[in-house]
Image 1 (cartoon, rainbow, N blue to C red):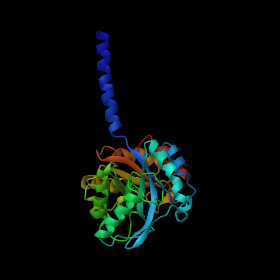
Image 2: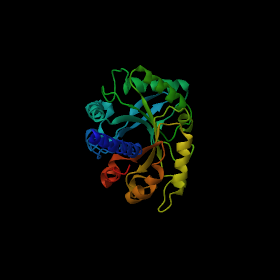
Image 3: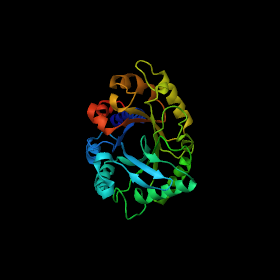
Length: 298
């Protein structure tokens, strides 16, 4: 009896230790879809490196345009070939990976011209990619987990309304996750207003192509100051550190693995809102093995 009691007492601190360590554990989000040489969606999820895969991009929509998805060399949406991704999406989700559609991007032709435009786009996204019904779902009958706002042009108006319209669909049985990829200068010029709604689950801030708020060799102060502003000002569930997966993946902001694991992550992982690392993109990650190198540290 005494022996059993001593074993039980010994186990409790160990469990507490595991919980404390686990509370800082983050995940990795990856953008997939803009290079036909980055492997299939199914293979991407099979690596075991990613918790979120973001499909890039629904690059044309708004102001009377018919929404169009662009997945580069992976499939041709005009011949309905992207419906074949449905089984890949389901295989990813079966592994516990959230698969999210990103709208916008750096080179798309998109805008929201009015409140009605925002409502119409929300309806389209629900019926064609989320839990609704349509006879022309571009990715087949798979139900995506949410919508990512990667807005880098067009207008700064009506994105908050789009977020509200989309969030209302969460009451219809399927949670619609809302994510965003703002630039690190705070507040973001495009989706700063939308992020104030508090409706976003995950925000992967792009700490690259923006020297005033990104890491430079040996100097973490700019990144750390920007990180503090994001986590204190944005009512999101989790904030992610967005990074290029290779030096060629962005104009600036690449962080060598050794610097990330020894300096940058230890400085931000204590934040209660720390969610992990977002990488652009799967193609570049294949070149460097970045996600594999940092996975145990995230």
